[in-house]
Length: 116
Picture (cartoon, rainbow, N blue to C red):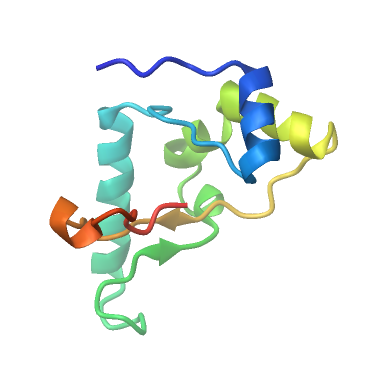
């Protein structure tokens, strides 16, 4: 299934009306698998170092794994949109790798599971 790409104008209108826009299918499954593997690697490399038993939040990822994380930052569709919202002097403060456990459709009901 291919999801049609929204125009920048449509994204801006949606953002102004709702306060957000969703960028669907920006990264392929190979890229997502690499990010999941990095999250697993970080968890395994630091046993017992996190407050929760299954940490899903790792900050400063561009510094930790620059080659792996660059595609998250170097995405022209997202960058073009952000520049329209923030202006030409936009800068990256932090890149966080955040993952949330899966939730069955029954558990989710009408809601969503931890995405942002």
